[in-house]
Length: 253
Image (tube, rainbow, N blue to C red; front, side, top):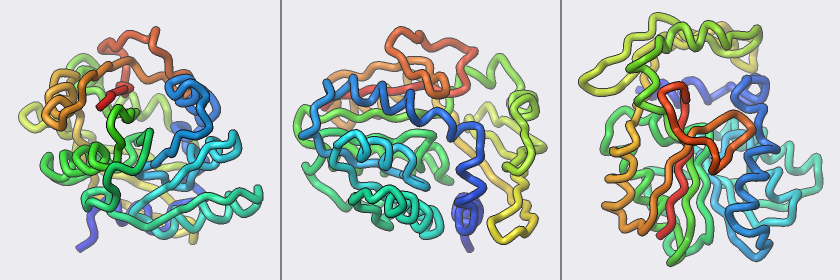
């Protein structure tokens, strides 16, 4: 049986690009460039690249990028978008829970969750971090976002999604946040790219900062820094608070 994230992304690529959370690509890539000192020799891996928005933007700026994703539909859309702009970058179908690269990349990015936090067990989420670490060269950098476990302790996830709801994109209902597992269980409703109305049961894992730090330290990252993640405006000046729905993590091996 396919997991909820496999069902969601098997035919949800064109509509995905209309989601509110996909509109901050330029500013997010500005931050990434600063983090690698605008060094065009850096080799970048984009885990859970989706329709390739960060991979394509970074490629346009002259970086060498490889994008991997579990969804063939998302990858097809990514390749079409890259070809339309005459860009040559690799998009590969890979499961991030399975090791594929070793000591290969200077930078690994995993934005807009990119697989991490979507998995059905904590062990699977850890495997994704483990393989991201394995893919990095010594002194390589990992930049990713995670759902902020501090947010649902002070706010309603249901109200957050309702306030952000727009037409022609996925909607989330019946949110139930489990304090024992830090997982939000909900019903995701969307119209796929074939025009079919779909409804699936989904659940996502929220992490608190100390969990992220411990997980990354266990993978031998030397430094772990965590910030608030504002859409399209990532910044080291953005101190993480309970108001942030997502956190931005920067770790160095």
